[in-house]
Image 1: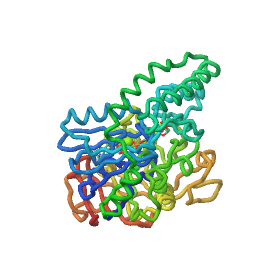
Image 2: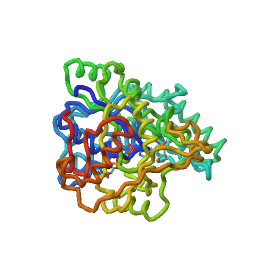
Image 3: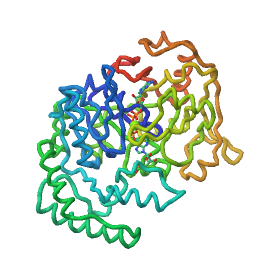
Image 4: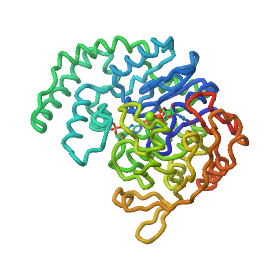
Length: 426
Ligand code: GDP
Ligand code: IMO
Ligand code: MG
């Protein structure tokens, strides 16, 4: 490995944080390329649980350079809180580098997110309400404020003034609520700027040089393929590009600098937020997966919707991100189920389709076609070798490989670093 992208293949929460932390041992640099503190990556080390939102999951090692790329949107209050939390656990953040081109989340983005969701009523998207969508909206509108602006008080003053005025007009005239006080935000953000200034740099130069020096680099995706703004289940998506292609625009390196892409596949499917979900289980098996897998959002605490593994989705993810192999997570959660199902296609208008449809109306009309497997009873949380897995668990993995056309490289059987079966070297 020299550069490896770690990408979520489903609707997020596949265990990207755990896999990034595991692989980071052999890497020198870990980079986030999109999203913001809507992401929640849980990493467990030595019995302690770390919930990371903006800081790359390589931070638990003292010697890894961790980069927040230009494609990320940064809420400085959340970032500073995360830095303080880590420091409180004795984890240094001196190796953190923050892009001067990343966009900044302001309180009016969070308010806008809340107001727009409320105004949609029943049709809300179920966002994390962290202001992520509105911040990317301003970026696309060319009115966003970037980290490089934040560090220049006069530039910040001018841009922020215009933005606060514009947002206040929107809040008053469209939503009938009071707006924000410019001075308060300005003072607060000048304080944040002082705190994050030592970490800010042109990360595009830094990263290019590190790759040219032959350093091993991991790109840690947030969210998942089906939450991608272009290729996900639009409009029930996030506002950035979690797919592997997001790395190039989100970090400023070219596609020829990406060597491999590992897809993180949860052994079943989950989703938070709204939108169609063909293999969703609204029964006792769904509840079993939620409770056994602790499927509650890291960022919002919401219960995650749970269902069977869907290889229509996985094949789609393999295709749109050029995934070379996969990491299967949470196989241990399936232990104890008598029967396990894998979706291999969708019944749609009396035909069976195997390509993921574009429209959510079509997706809502898709009925999963399943293959059924016998489960296993043995506890697999301490298994270290593939051959030691129960025969039915081995069969399950091998069948996934056949159905999606790529090989498993890692099997995760628990949240800790040690609870990992490695099938190839990195
Ligand atoms: P991410 O957003 O993709 O990083 O995933 P999350 O951290 O939101 O959710 C995955 C959860 O599953 C976290 O609580 C992890 O600690 C946990 N986890 C990761 N891999 C495994 C595994 O193989 N088995 C079990 N039981 N838990 C895991
Ligand atoms: P990680 O990195 C799961 C979902 C939200 C909502 C939609 C849009 O932990 O996998 P947003 O706040 O981004 O505008 O919400 O995207 N969502 C996630 N779901 N895991 C995440 O991150 C998510 N980040 C956003 O629930 O449906
Ligand atoms: Mg998560």
